[in-house]
Length: 92
Image (cartoon, rainbow, N blue to C red; front, top):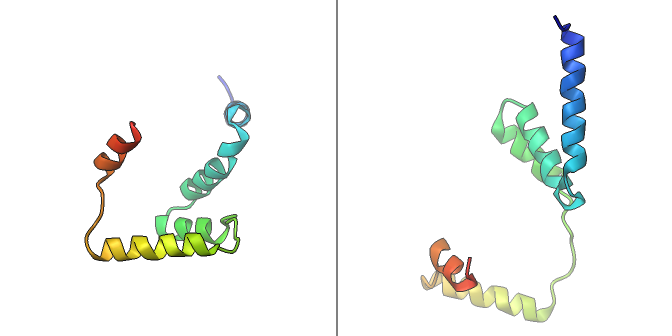
């Protein structure tokens, strides 16, 4: 019969192998998910994820600001698309 520490070691080894299989682009999501399931309160987890988020902050250029304003105006007029419409438009 395997001891608890041996089982724990097997689980850790399995987890380490699994972590090694992820692509680098997925590390942030995996880290956040692990932090999320570690805590019992989803709200606290979400707050922690957002506080630790590595946002790429840069100044918005004038064209982007104008696009945002245009989108806000269209949204205010009810010009919105469903997820299904967007998927169809993108061919996914």
